[in-house]
Amino acid sequence: MPRNLIGSDTSLRSIKPGDPRRRISDGDGLYILLFVNGGAHGWRFDYSIAGKRKTLSLGTYPTIGIGLARERAEDARRKVAQGIDPSEARKAVRAAHVQAREATARAEAGLPVLDSFEHVAREWYEVRRADWAESYGVKIIGRLENDVFPYIGTRPIAQIDPPELLTVIRRIESRGVVETAHRALENCGQVFRFAVATGRATSNPARDLKDALRKPLVQHFPAITDPKRLGELLRACDGYKGTHVVRTALKLAPMVLLRPGELRHAKWEEIDLDAGLWTVPAARMKRKKVGKLHGAPHLVPLSTQAVEALRDLHPLTGRSAYVFTGERSHERPMSDAAINAALRAMGFGKDEVTAHGFRATARTILAERLNVDESVIEAQLAHAVKDSLGRAYNRTEFRVERFSMMQKWADYLDELRRGADVVKLRAA
Image 1 (cartoon, rainbow, N blue to C red):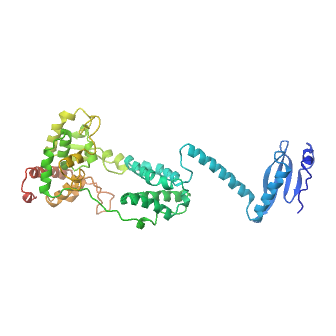
Image 2: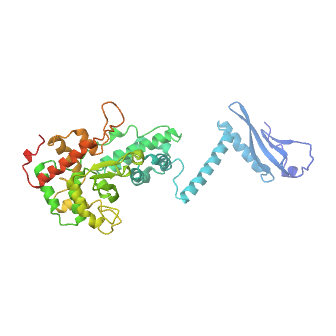
Image 3: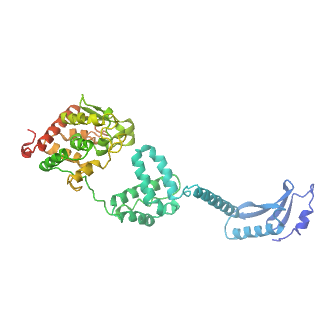
């Protein structure tokens, strides 16, 4: 088709308002529309692609002279010849520029790149965090920030494939923390599923990687289950040369069947010494967030021995909110390492006993030597137990039985402490 039908810029400059022409063709699809933008004229290029007739704007005259308009039209013709829609190509370029500007702005603001793994992961985290206890959420985001984001955080999430993700997870595994590697993989899988659901990815590369990692070795908290050795430990605790606060905690830890964190955060307002009952708030128990917010408190029947120990401690820490106050400040609870440090100082290694292990000690001996019903023990341990009827959790509390069990357990510990014949210390 003929081209360059417009003589020169001079002919365009000579066009005056009132010119009857609506458009002037330069040939082969390029033309100029007169007075489309105030006193300016608009360059247009008509083309056909995939059977559709389309028009591309090439700018306005005189900003875009005839030479530049012809260059742009020729570039559009080449794209059409290659099967590329010049309008769509322009939109893609503009989108890329916008994305680049947004990426620069986000980087300057310290934010992750749009649709990167870190961006999607943080979005997923914000959606889910309301369902978790704060401490649980902190562990998840910390795991991602320390072990995943530094390596694939900036990568477009849709481009990450299984081998790339496996390299990241094996980096964690190589440190010997196999369980952490499995948990990181699980979290990554949750992020990828969220990306698929929100249209940022088409598959979950974590799905098929579980068998590519070593299986974690299940390790239970070390605990003494031999009555004779337990008696030795109890006598050592009674003779502990540290602070009275820690010595009392050592005395109570075997008796109350609580987790170390639940014990050390005890407050005097929770304890009724006259009734022999400790009411631990739901928020401090090991539960899902809904259980912490709306669940019932956990009741700990106190044996006469436990009440006596607490009454003895009260003159020292009773003015503080906390029962087991910190050594440096009575406004804070004692250190989470205090009991374990005391056990080590008394010569009991970490492979033999830990503060948490007292629960396993009680669980084992109560069932095997004192013949206490396991359901009662589990209730006192605050374990969520599935029942035979398929309800979500067994809500039976066995209050009467638990009061009896806790006193029986404290009496048994006293017998061990005195060095009684452990073979004869069995329920009738």
